[in-house]
Length: 218
Ligand code: AP5
Image (cartoon, rainbow, N blue to C red; front, side, top):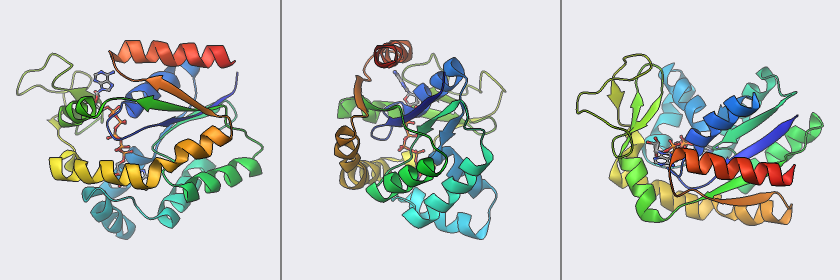
């Protein structure tokens, strides 16, 4: 079955974690704008330098830059089975851009899953996040059993904190989310696509809830 999904919610709510699970379960591509932008930054291109300063300060990369970037990415993916998006769209402008891109390839979104979590839990998830430098696997020092000098369980790489997970940057990311991204809730509610899911609990609990809401909708 074809499934076209967006995972939506504030920084650190668990979009990436659940996106990977959905991608595996449904056999559809997982497309994370944040991961893709970080990968581009590692290439150290001219555009990467500009993106990096927005990201490290907790600001959104300008719409025009992200839209061009995402459009090139989408052109390369086989979208015939579906996709799960994480981190895109993040503004009304980006949502309209996505609508028009999908319109051109005759694809309709099935659902926008909005993950809900109290602020204290968001702070804990972000401050505890560690990412493998090499394979980008994501861990959490509060929720996974963890030694101080732990290495990645998948590839043995070093685990590091993301530059934009520092406290002052996280505060700005949450402000930017409330200002620029939250309006998308009404945008997708009006289209009848928004499904709210409680993101409190273990990764498995949340994955189960998402599976249930998707099967209710099918
Ligand atoms: P991006 O990478 O998209 O960051 P984000 O939206 O702020 O989201 P996060 O990656 O912080 O969190 P997440 O919800 O994916 O949570 P995760 O699963 O990792 O964007 C970064 C920057 O890029 C932006 O600030 C912006 O500058 C730029 N950018 C990206 N897209 C853009 C766009 N479209 N337009 C403009 N600019 C853009 O989980 C967090 C932690 O919690 C992990 O440690 C995880 O292990 C843990 N965890 C997850 N679920 C659970 C659970 N159920 N229980 C316990 N722990 C859990």
